[in-house]
Length: 535
Image (tube, rainbow, N blue to C red; front, top):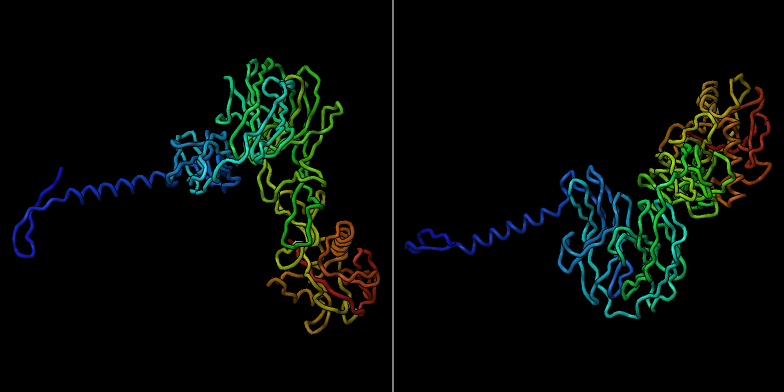
């Protein structure tokens, strides 16, 4: 259709003009604008997801993934990455399916052409039918495939339960190209592939690896193949099959509360900007073994709900046949630690010949990860309260901060006066106030030097009590000598003491050295002064 209309031209002549091309162009521009809006995550019900950088780019495959930021108000039922040779790929293009839930995921991208540029986005679809996309990334595959497919084998499945099974596989030859992903895939149909959501990813590399096959249905036959992906493509092992056991009873247990978050000393660094990591202590109380002997117990945890030994981090614990056990998320000497300021979900588990039983799920959030030596709130953290001490709060860290250096060299006081002081932890503020009130602001004292301190633009510094400075110094001595963690610039001399705000009598005050050893000294001795504040 074309539209005609009459106008007068510059010569005053009337003419007929057609605007079909212009109208078509406007319609096309409007259509493009509408199409672009369809991929913008502006709907509150649309998941929000971040695309992970593309790595291990080979001639025929690559690795990426995603991090789900928000599920849009309903459960995530599918997630992965989609790609194509045109911009803004969608789930109607090539894609992976990397399961459900809000946990981060890794995607192995196969079926690519060599020396070709691709556009890629992570995606997440929720039960409302809304699909959100991450930012678009581009990458170019390498020219030509180098090597051949990897060789991989799988052993017969021998450890079988009603809802899970364990497998052992082996990448015996990488084909001359590094293996970037390996694992097992399974299903109720023969010859499963990695296009299925039912697969594991045990990372790259060659050699033997173990996999846990989860989410199975009792009394069902499954087919399993191990896979290995290198720069040439993905290869599969021969197929094995197994049948899950009847839905026989599994152990019944409850999860113990996460009783303590212990800062891991080995995670410490002399870099005063780094925060520590945590070890979480928990366990389980078993009420039934499910009619079959329990062979292992432990805890599993994740940043996603309902963790299992196949989907989250887990730690087995020795089983001494008692009905109660304790376990932890890591040891000082390993790398299994909890991250500061992170919410976790944890469950205890117990396994018998029928399968794995899980306790109730516990949600907890780690704190900042403060430990002595961290720069914080105008000074250096010198002491963090421990469980059982007055003022301890598992959810919020409390303790003492000191100035990085001495604030003065001063007498305890310049005259003999009766002043009420206490030696207990937590009394330094009141002691300081009492000392300063007993003298004029022109009278020098260790307490006044601390009260006038403005380190970090803060005005709540005070002279620590005997109990407070002993904890500070004892902690410093332990950390600096046992862990090699140096901070605070204390003078390491047994004869060198720092004033406290506590006194044994009117003529003397308590001093403490860097080992936490106390002594009584005449009030007019000039000692180093270190200001503290509470957090």
